[in-house]
Amino acid sequence: MVTSPASQGPPDQDSARQVPVGRRLFLGMLGLGVAGVAFGATVQQKVGQALGSGLGRLLPGGDNFQIYSVSGSFPQIAPSAYRLEVSGLVERAKTFDLAALQAMPPVQLVRDFQCVTGWRVPEVHWEGVRLSDILDAVGPKPAAGALAFESYDGVDTESLTLEQAKLPDVIVAYRMLGAPITVDHGGPVRLYVAPMFGYKSLKWLSAIRVVKSATPGYWEQNGYPVNGWLDGSTGPSSPTGG
Ligand SMILES: Nc1nc2c(c(=O)[nH]1)N[C@H]1C(S)=C(S)[C@@H](COP(=O)(O)O)O[C@H]1N2
Ligand SMILES: [Mo]
Image (cartoon, rainbow, N blue to C red; front, top):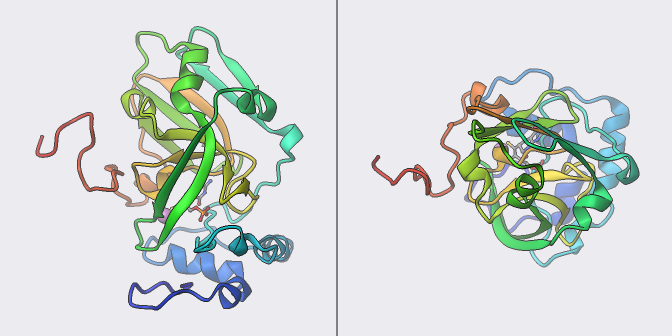
C-alpha cells in the first residue's frame, strides 16, 4: 500500500509501518515537484515511533494513510499548549484551547478518506466540532465570504468559502481513528473537510481568518484542483454543469 498502485491486494500493516516515513512522503510528493520534503533524522525517528505505536490495530481496516508534510517537519504541540485563533471579519475574535473545543457539542463522522493521488482509506472515524459552531461563536460580519486556514507548520494553507465552511460535515477534528489525533496526522487538532479530497483537511490547524474571498491554498498553488469535491461536482453551492 505504500507504493499504492490500485491493483495491489490488501495492505500489509506491519511492512507498511517499517517503510521510512521520508520515503512514504516522497512517494506522495511525486508529480507535484514540491520542494522541502527532506526529513531530519530526529523527526523520522519520532514518526517511526508514532507509526509503530499500534495505530493500525485501533480499527478494523487499520491506518492505511500516507503521511504528508509539505514543510518537511511535524510540529509537536502539547495538547495543553494548543490554541486555535479565529479572527478577521468577525464580531468577536476568539482563541480556543483544546478544552474549549472539547466543551462544544461533538460530532462524529465515519467516511472514506481520499487523496487526489489515488490512495484511499475506508471508513475512518473522526470526532470534533462543526466549523459552523465555531463560526457562530465568533459571528462573521456581513462582508465575510471565505475562510483562510493556517497551520502550525507555517507552510501549508487552505481555504473554503463561507458557504462550504457551514456544511455539517466540515469539522475541526481532535479525534481520528479512535484516538486523539497523533502528531503525524496533524494533532492535536486538524481540519476535516469530509466532502472534499484530503488536501483540504489541513493538519496542525493554528488559525482561521475570516476574509472577503477565498485565496487558493498551498496545494492549489501547486497544481491541485481548486474544485476539491470528492464527487467531481462543483458542489452544493453551484449545481453541476453551472
Ligand atoms: N499541514 C498539512 N496539512 C496537510 C498536508 C500537509 O502536507 N501539511 N497534506 C494534505 C494532504 S494532500 C492529504 S491527502 C492529507 C493526508 O493526511 P495524513 O497525513 O494524515 O495522511 O493531509 C492534508 N493536510
Ligand atoms: Mo493528498
